[in-house]
Image (cartoon, rainbow, N blue to C red):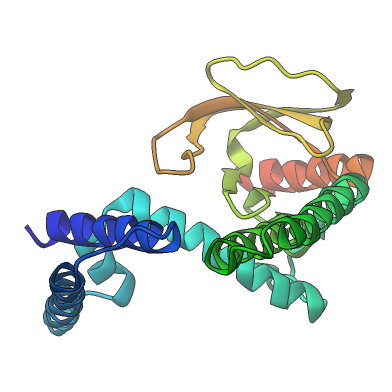
Length: 268
């Protein structure tokens, strides 16, 4: 029940906000009812959250109960993009532990992303000039335009701060803030260094292209799940990705696979 109300009230608030920006006259009692509903929903959500925490659930576990999974995943994606901007400025990477070997993969998309961000910035300036006589619409469009620029830069920042990672037992492949795939080494049957610029969608295949290209292909003995953005399962047995130094990743992975096979042999 709380989930249904939680989806309805924000949607109504957004609709009212759009009407106000567009200059539609909203009766004052309706606005008061909408604000009261938002306050009641916030109080009910906070109470339910605290109740779930007292039952022993973690913060994310409590949110998963109260918030629909697709909404939670989408909000998490946006937060990761924004946090990547801070990591990018601080020249830090996330997810790289002691003994892990990172492999960057954002170099070949940098020019494209910077160009796209510049175009969005020019569009922001142009829309500000065109909408100068409509301040409310101008304010709404300005917020969207600024967020679009931050979104584009966040996509590139997420790729820079989230490199591929090779550990002692798995290969972690990432793309921006929406793909984070852990492939156990024992499931990697073969790795090939091959540069591809065209990728057709196929069942059981995942293409993590950067600048429209992939440079490594992994064949797996058993499928691994690569969930889609909203959480839908996607089992894959062939994974293609790109790395700035693809040959170095292929060599390091080959060595890691050899060591893993040696550990599996008794007495070695």
